[in-house]
Image (cartoon, rainbow, N blue to C red; front, side, top):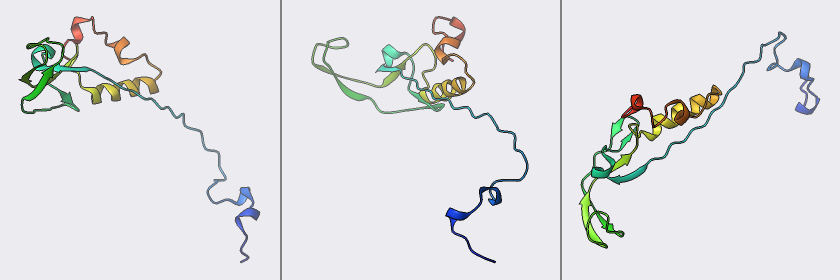
Length: 122
């Protein structure tokens, strides 16, 4: 057996190239993202949910710079929640949006519109 450098290997002899025809598979890639505003749980009306898991946390101290919840510059304690028409789960929604993109479907927000009462809390 004679060894040859890779520069002289004939492409037709390449072991990684089969001698039979392979039907090419269509590759589709999608990407998705989802964002929701966080606010005090009283305003948001629902907890933080990430990947189907409710994120429980202790009340935190926050400075109210605008005076929306207490006097301007005052400190108040609250938990955060997610402001969303849906459940606000950014992981699930990002994955669904990526799958929709790979399938050349519209954005998740166009399919499940936030003004449709059927999707409230979903």
